[in-house]
Length: 335
Image (cartoon, rainbow, N blue to C red; front, side, top):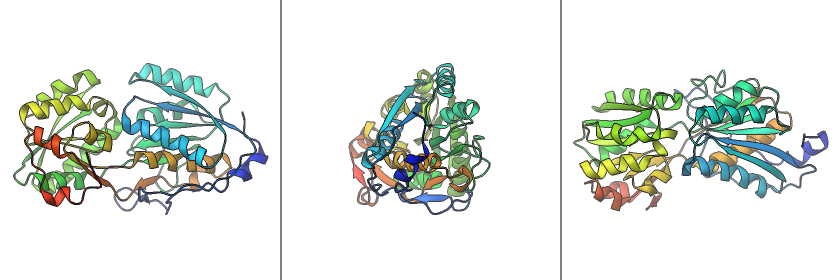
């Protein structure tokens, strides 16, 4: 159902959980602490239809979708969600975008960079909110972090690659090489690898890389790397097949570090993670701002400032790593 003006006042109470103005990622992007707040309940005068497109199934991206839907439920706003998943196939994703463009939905949530790029190409007349996008400027989605343009706004999961590498050095002081398997077709992954290489040079580390085009290639790519540790970035293709890297880590006794909570739960030893459920809730707040008429240029891209440390002591042991107490003691959660 299309939005009517009478409905707009009913959603004004739902605001961003921790918005503070954005800047370029090399300085201080708009940040969210990761804890967030629950939006105030407000009865909606109208129901809405929102399309949700997801590039692939894996727990981090699933959490974004769930957080997005939860935010509307918590606010008492009636929404019909049309959820579509490309399951990693670009042609399917293109079809989803075209179908959404010809629908009468009020707005769209695009989860992950390839999804946002596909929807942005064909949907220009209604709000498109992105989430789990690492660098929306590099991806060509927005002109700047501070002032998005056109009909797009959203939330970034920009990962603290230097902090991740410092965590690896703390756990493995003698480490010299870190292996990263990533999809060369994902701009978000290229950005993370570039940042990792810059940080590694400062920390006396070398990044060794292997690229893949689909999830079936992940295990062979990981096995090809002779490294002291693996780091799994927020790469949709690799995270969907994280068990393949973990299996290599166990076989070769190479500790695996990761960038999202779900991968630690699935068997990575440790890592810093974005709160993806909160990403979804922040994306819902942005959607409602757009639907009520706020220009996208007035909604800076959100990034998270504080990251949760997750550890999996048992998994580390299977990979030949005894996590030091200095890491375990400050973990947000242990699996």
